[in-house]
Amino acid sequence: MRTIIDFLKKEFLQLMRDPRMLPIIFIAPILQLVIIGYAVTFDVKNISLAICDLDRSQSSREFYQSFESSGYFNIEYFIDNIGEVDYYLDKTLANIVIIIPKDFSKNISKGTSSKVQVLLDGADANSANISMGYTSSIVFNYNQKILLEFKDKSGYELKFARVVPETRVWFNPELISAKYFIPGVIGLLLTLMTVLLTSMAIVKEKEVGTLEQLIVTPIKSWELILGKLVPFIIIGFIDVVIVVTAGILIFDVALKGNFFLLLLSCIPFLFSTLGLGLFISTISRTQQQAMMMSVFIVMLPFIYLSGFTFPIENMPEIIQFTTHFIPLKYFLIILRSLYLKGVGISEIWDEMLIMLAIGVVIFFLSLIRFRKSLE
Image (cartoon, rainbow, N blue to C red):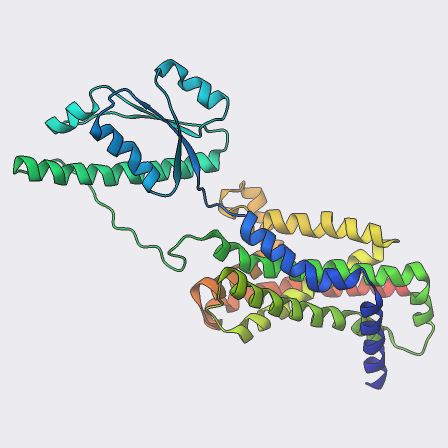
């Protein structure tokens, strides 16, 4: 036991003396949180809107002003000639062009329907779909307003079949993307810290020749592996605390679930990331190779196939099958459930067991390969 403690002290001293490691360990988590929290978002705001009002009436003005008052649209252009509409879309000057016909106010005053043409720039399909949803909601609210005004003026209500939805969003009622992405940052950081730093630290020992010196010492192989991995486990937990605290202070995204349950769920995930770090260290000769392999073998597949960025349900079936072997997929489900829903262990224990099974297999296969590389 004394040998392990002394070895751990040596590892921590070595980490603290490396000027490249400290920024990665303590500054990178906050930078990544800020970048993802502010930049990576599915929220669509400040949509550029161009208006072609051929009616030029009070009703038409009220209609297009309802878009600007929603807070999602900015009216930036007014088009006098309908032939100029294509120009604003082709030059990407406007994301949406609304064409209001000449008989708009006349039809409304009669209580009949009036068609309004909405042209969207579909180059960015995600933004176009969200903008279309905003547009439908604004038009629906405007229709309700017209019906009430018509009833007040005429004394009777227009009769037609319609369904009026009453929507309530659970868990994230404001639909803020940061509340969805920030829990995922914990998973990415644990992956980055444990895989990248573990592989680079062991490869560094190979580069400078100290790993061979450790092998010929009386220290046992399991003590060597434990001494190499424990510091990064501790660093991983420290980074989790940093991200949770920064998420509250910077983005006001609080953890609804139990904090200690969050830390507990990190343990099975660490088996897989530490195992991958060990594996990469056995096939890398330099720290640069270890870093590149960590990015291309681990980080990119984890980001793309875990559901962090893209919904797994939208992927082809063969790709969906491969996601079952990505431990970050299950870890993200746990993190988002704890953050947004405040669930207990009974709701996430199956993901923890799956993650533990995958992690144990990865860790021990990598452990066997690492031991062979020491012989």
